[in-house]
Image (cartoon, rainbow over all chains, first blue to last red; front, side, top):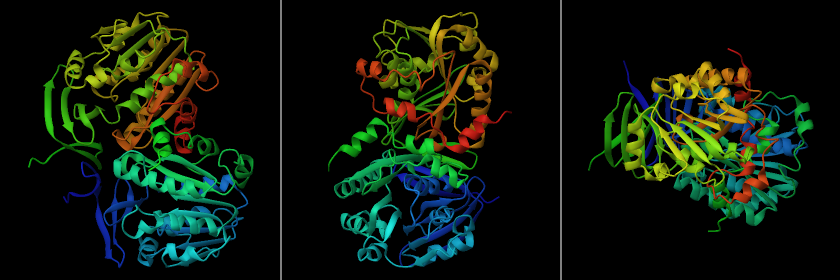
Length: 284
Length: 284
């Protein structure tokens, strides 16, 4: 019997491995290497340059947390920009809100979208919603000339190496600020506090965002297949506070069934462990 | 160069591996197999029957969360029973409270304590505190004849297989109930919601506790080296509610510096993801 394992180095000293049934697909694009696998524990999963991006077992956690926190903080959001997110899971959650009118998604690598549409319909199935506009461009360039165009920007990026690198710069965050309306919110893939490389990226992203946005907070969630399982999003906004301004009743009224997110957890997720708070307060 | 890896199967399809500098010690006791290793990422760590118990990098998380939640919920706790916990980390945190008068620790396997005293002084160093009484006995038998003897029982157990199995039974929880004073609290190592085997153990433990204790809640924390990194404790008590009754100011006054725990996180940790709440509400 074939004994095939996918392994990811979470640090050069720590390895996470998943038993694979089948290597479904591989492609080298101008940007990165894509691989799709099937597995018993996590269903279909896909990697970019060998790193786990999305799998069928825990994608609901990441996609719940990247979208619903902002949408419950401001249930009047009408116009959304997703940067990255080629698997489509973030867009899928956004399309569940009837009051959202426009979803622009800018993914640098069209091949990711096409492969996810074929192998991961669980996340990619709503990319054809009539409100969704797909742009296969560099998100950094796309956002440059936009002024007060979006109520929400979701930065659904890879790690700050390779094609995702430009998404962790201050110039990019400044452009995002300018692209947001006066009630605008930015949610940023904020890496993790636990292993050194990830916590350095977390601190850098956070320090840059807090120089620009009046409200700048961090929330956490349990993401079993990401390094350490302890993952974060940054919540930055011009005015709206994710705790004081949460519209619990309005959000409940929309009637979405969510498997991870709920409005109590929303508030709770901003209470961080002491060592994480201390790291975020450090200035570089 | 020696390329030595410790691996643990988190499920039969998922493997977590740590690069090892040295295999420091091994011992077969009448109860289980002990192994101690040194590593760059996690410092010294030890395993029982091949499963990660404690390491120097993330032990502070587990030991903060098993002790301080109960101690902040009732700062008058004077008498504590620790069942299991041979590494000493739970006792170490308890000894930081000057008002605790008595700490009984019942560990079935003396060899665990002796090896941790030698190889893991970080956790074992306070076992010689004058308030600590060590009993090398079966915790299940030890608790049987105790009546209203403890304000707090911490069940710091291994998984419900091998020597830890009896600690997940209703008879044992009933004996704990009887051993607690009228303000008594039980904190139980509650496994994890994520992988099937762990979530089954979680549901079993929770269903048994909620039949016995008027207050029965569950709180979560990020434990990177345990399967999925998403781990839980059960909080069961005769009267005290960990959220309504938290004594924030009194706890702050004690002046303990903690790296993971804080009183905001205490409250937040009881807000669980929707799928976990639903699992806990299921009856077997």
